[in-house]
Image: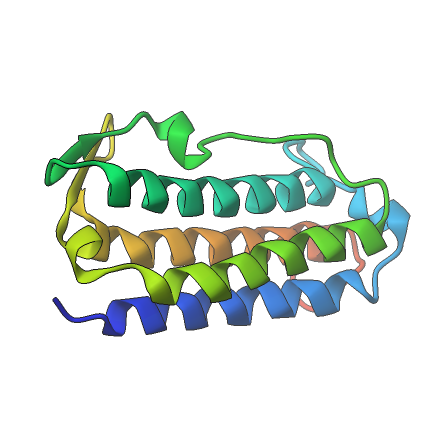
Length: 164
């Protein structure tokens, strides 16, 4: 099994999360609690989601390592689907949560064994994937939410650029 997928997923997640950490260092606490003009999650809620779903996927990888069969059924919620905890009250705490998730990813993703990468997971409404095939989806999901935060901030005039 090619473990290049681990390096790629780790790099994509690390790059996106470092970018978010930097962004959180330049916006105000008030900006952190902004949402799209038409509603939806605030930046703080998206940070909470990124933090929780990152840690849940790491836990899922450990569950898969301990699971003796080559196939495992998982509910979307076990991956962090729509999971939001308490939103961070400040940009400093938000950045710390993102740093925590980033470090956990940097330390855990590269250690996933070829045996785990070869296992399949079945997720209702999403389908069946090998773990290796799902790793880019996880890292892409994190990068998407970083872009979501930037889009919220652009829509509120906090970041330069076209409104998303």
